[in-house]
Image 1 (cartoon, rainbow, N blue to C red):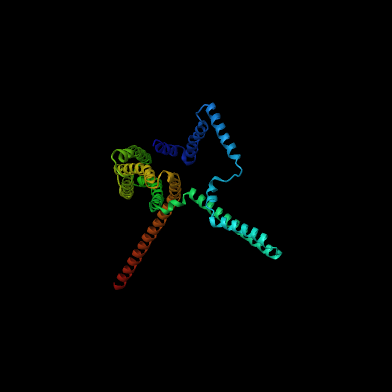
Image 2: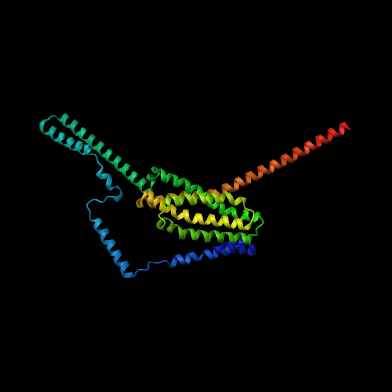
Length: 331
């Protein structure tokens, strides 16, 4: 909240390059903070926990056959028919050997048993591969796309990423074009940040204390945020911009954390981590493509308007010249 005016002062004083160098120096303190983040537990407890983990690992290695934990379920899915076929092939082989002394018949029986064994092994490998693939896709959360609610949230998050960050990029230019100084315009970001903080503090009381549905809170504040973005281009004074940007910041501070509550409410805790991963992924894509696409559209519209006015001016000038020639010919 405090940095937008500071950024503007640095840009005015040192230019873009100097401002970026100073901002990079301030943000490099994050590296020091990351190096200081260590486990606060005493070393004795850490060593004890490590020893327990080593003991569990040694016990698991003593098993006669080691399997991947994610593929263990595939062994339980072996079809009983395959096992019975293997048993039948073995029993048939022994019966044929005991009852018949013909070498050709024994050879044919053994070849059929080998073919059955090969077929059963191929089917087993196919099922093992299929089950491992299905388990991997399940861990990535692709099953969530079978839920219409999650698909709707996923698409909505994409457009919210485009809308929010595009507004933040072009908001300063819009306010400055209305006659507000750049330093005063940077204070609007502080207003947005304060209102967003208030929304993050109050959304819990709406859902928990007031017993309001999180879906209702989420949908209403998304609507309010979209409405304020439509009204911001119509603003002409600093007070109007401050009110609209404050409402937009408040709505963002509410619907962003409530979206996590909605995902937990509809999908369950077991699917929350995968759902958040997909939501943040598509929001990041919207954030990346939103401002460039908006800038491209703005340039295209500006060029189209420029060509329109140039065409109108040329047409009007040509028309006046034609009228003047007609007047001169009549005289």
